[in-house]
Amino acid sequence: MKTYKIAAIPGDGIGTEVISAGVDVLHALAARDGNFALEVEDFDWGGDYYKRHGRMMPENGRDLIRNHDAILFGSAGHPDIPDHVTLWGLRLAICQPFDQYANVRPTRVLAGITSPLRKVDRTELDWVIVRENSEGEYAGVGGRVHQGLPLEAATDVSIMTRAGVERIMRFAFRLAQSRPRKLLTVVTKSNAQRHAMVMWDEIAGQIAAEFPDVTWDKMLVDAMTMRMVMKPESIDTVVATNLHADILSDLAAALAGSLGIAPTANLNPERDFPSMFEPIHGSAFDIMGKGIANPIGTFWSAVMMLEHLGEPQAAKRLMTAIERVTADHRFHTPDLGGTARTADVTEAVIAAIQGAND
Ligand code: ATP
Image 1 (cartoon, rainbow, N blue to C red):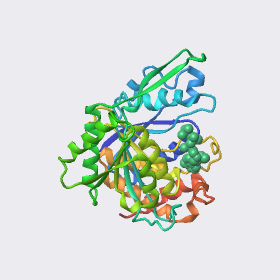
Image 2 (cartoon, helix red, strand yellow; image 1 turned 180 degrees about the vertical axis):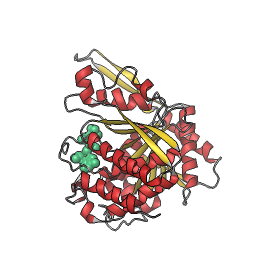
Image 3 (cartoon, rainbow, N blue to C red; image 1 turned 60 degrees about the vertical axis):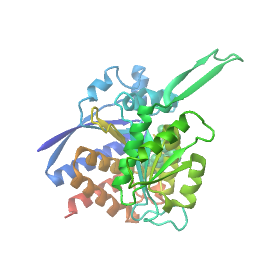
């Protein structure tokens, strides 16, 4: 029997609540399936760790998780610590050195969930957004001089490389090709940004030639926000830069019903390093400790993790259990307009896993 070593990094805020729910569900799934086992190791890194140690994770942190099969991440942040410190100190400190360059964000209106978009139904909103996750606007290149003086200057330089753009385009075209509609939208801003984004467009055209069966189009990011709202059915797979996709995927999550549902996978497709799976929401300090965080985004992220580990049957069983539960309004948390608690949803998903015959 295969045993997968999972590094759980719950982080801060509701991250701790949803990851412990996710781990319970994964254990229930492994017990039900019988084909694989999970060894989950917890790492207490994040904002609270920073308060104690002055850094978000230990200096050898990456070495400690380097040989795990996958990472399940909650959210990192602290009301007293600037967001750029928490982001660069943990999430990006793992994503970038582990070369998790493909950030995959599926969006669907799950059974029982109502989209705020009028008239949209489950068949009309079924997207996957691929976010370039290693360079672009998040390259970390820039600086600040003369701080506090009138002549203070600051730059954040977006870096795009041919190798980086080619690999994410190829990943996105391949993903689009694997989906029934074989449809890809390349998001750009090459009207205003006339160097890197023009290269981005050119490379998209070059890679497209390798995938003649994929229909693709190009869309400016501003126009894309309108299209997501006005014509959601015209979209299937989307590829965008680090920053553009970050913004578009929050919109996508809201259109699918709640930020609390949306999952994401930070993939190192070559499997040289472990990949990381996390709900897209943040630490949500406004609801922390109340027991009402929606754990579905974490459960769906666990589905993506199982797919990546090569356990498609368990992944499918978990996704079916999730949708069986979301279909029942008694198990909707307050973000979905219900009164259910994190524990109610978790217990219901575990019961659905245990009862499922498929
Ligand atoms: P960060 O800066 O870490 O992204 P944030 O608090 O700015 O965190 P989110 O944590 O993403 O942003 O939360 C935005 C809003 O969505 C909050 O009002 C929060 O309560 C709500 N929210 C986010 N995730 C969930 C969830 N899993 N369940 C319920 N509500 C959620």
